[in-house]
Length: 84
Image 1 (cartoon, rainbow, N blue to C red):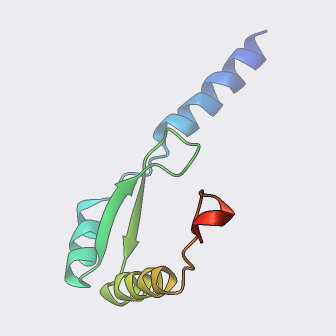
Image 2 (cartoon, rainbow, N blue to C red):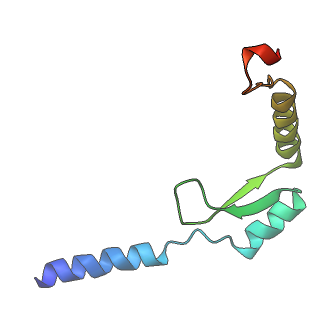
């Protein structure tokens, strides 16, 4: 019983000490590199994580999204065959 309690508290301590928070040095380095950092929760998760991207990555993602919107085909819906 005592061993399991000690092991449990040890594991709890290890998980409690591990942190995903960014240090001030990491934040300064990201600002210097002109990265854009956003805290967001991935789909299906409650836990928020920090996601950093360079300006080039942001620009490329934006252009890819715009290109995807341009390539979308319009779907006409509803109506009867007589209205065509």
